[in-house]
Image 1 (tube, rainbow, N blue to C red):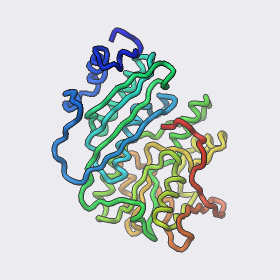
Image 2: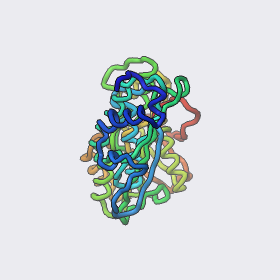
Image 3: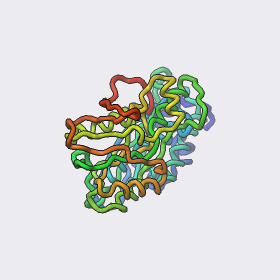
Length: 339
């Protein structure tokens, strides 16, 4: 590439577009299916039911401790598939670039996408690039879609949640939300505050393969809206109450400090590498052991139970000082552009 910035020509579909694809995207994303540069990816027969997910990423800043917009896009879509019990098998990658974007910035993003997709074992199979005039975008927007296969016997849904189930959170909550907020505000906190962006499909695979069929009822990743919003959505769907023990909820000291400074509730903060698993109470301890042994699950804890003896559709927090309060879903938008 002779230019150091993205030009409108790079989105024209002509020689500049061809050069961008060949000298940047195929340099890092070298899967044979993608390299054929067809209008669609053809995937060989796979066993199981098809899962499909799509998401868009507009995070600001593009790069942050623990990740960047590229790794976030890969991890986010892989995790969405995993929460449905799917084995991810391929991704699409579409980028909307603003005219004037530094080429080195774009290369850094694409290199991150390539590294993460290889680490996850989930290749980018097809893609697209568009360039908008300067002032009509914000550097880089990414859309990723993913497909995966769900093996027979796996059927996960909030409607499957039952009385007596236990709720497991795979690690400290709020890391991503506080990292983005403090980075944007220029606030420095003591400790190793960083995003929790990480792939969860291996953890989910271990859980589903390590427990009796039908005992994993629901999996969700508490991204936007945080743990509180996700648990409320589950409670409303199953019609039961979810009782959470505040002292059992993992949270890093840096996140707690950041929430105090910024006046935020950690239950409402975004996570990008955490899983909420609701399983049959009889296998709760075994499920916790499996998650703790899986990548990114070392800090997992059982944080609550599902109960029919309370008013249904609510999340109730037993506080550390012996009180009780209703945990509501996030209202408004206290943390924009977190993913």
